[in-house]
Length: 514
Image (cartoon, rainbow, N blue to C red; front, side, top):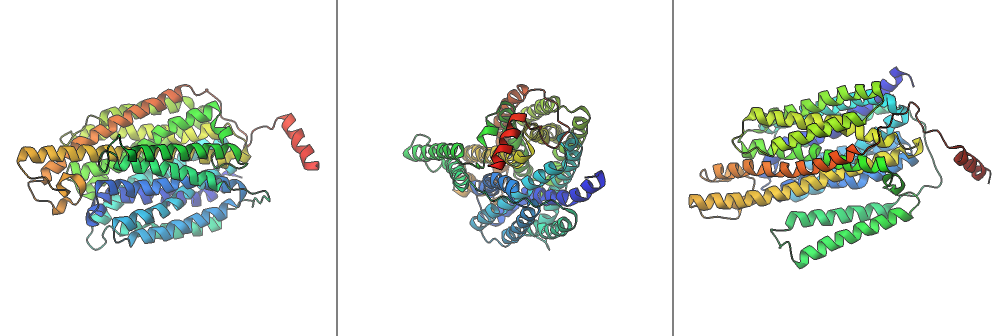
């Protein structure tokens, strides 16, 4: 394909990614107001995010595998329809239970849009040239990430719109993306008669992760750390994941190809991606809450205050993408990105409800730069080591683990935040001589309905507790940095496919004759 043809096809893919990204960023800043309007709790706040991430994570490998077996354009269009219908359903939700359920369905579409866009690009462009186009991807994702909070804040603050339009706004974008892809994207139809989908593996992975995340949400509140509920849920989750691993080792078409994951560089890249996933999801989710509940700003102002992190993603992803294409090297940029990411997390771990906004902005900028330099380059590391026929499965694997890191990160950080907030509010109320009730102890996010003397205590508790969750993130970033340090300094290949070994080609030729 010529550069012009690639750009024409890429236009629809960029709009698809924009739709997927903005669906999360539009909601992120408005989420405190949404949960408050629906009388939800901190745990439900976390699960509105976790439900979509978990569904996206569990379905991503399946979409990646389907892309290796069926028509990629048709799959992309199906995903757009799923996403559009579920977005409408989220906008009409009447309580947090309904919202969480519809967000899970929306996550299916989000996971498909993100992985299928990467797979289509990998099928059109060689790894070395891909860095150049990844710069465009990073720029569009950054625009969606920067513009999303501002748009979400504006919608939530506008009385004649209201928070429901944070979900409805995605519909016109999905319609435009569907039409644009129908016109510009032309890929050969791939049909295989020996199609097998590993539904058991996907179901076991989703079930195992879900059980562990539910345990993280309720442990320490509904039951103790050392209890029969903990033993049952942790033991059950481990058994389910062990069964999933056994299934993945046995089936012919696993959703997570163990032969790819077991290789040194892909395994290290996946481990580093877990840290990036936590930064990408956890930062956006809890910083918006910090500015609104911890510092008392409205949704629009909170969206403006998160711009430094998004600007960091925008410039670092665009610039590093072009530099990777020019040099053919990824490791130096990944290492620098993870070092900057770690520095940003360490800075955010020191914030409280009185920290200077200038310092908070600098720390967020560092996190954004770190994410932008490392996220797409870690995908390139894996794509560079597999043949074209495994691009979908390999891309799905790293996206799966990155999303898993974000899902686990949001759930764990949310549980830590909820526990610290409840403790801090109880202590603050005791010092003020105010009797503690259930909602005042941190179980409700409806600040507007709280008595005036309690509001500053709740705000201080959220502002001070946010720093502690980023200290945990910094520890995980260290693990990602160590993993990236052991990556081989490989050169990106110029060809679309790996050269096939002579022995393997002869075997396939003989098998074809047989």
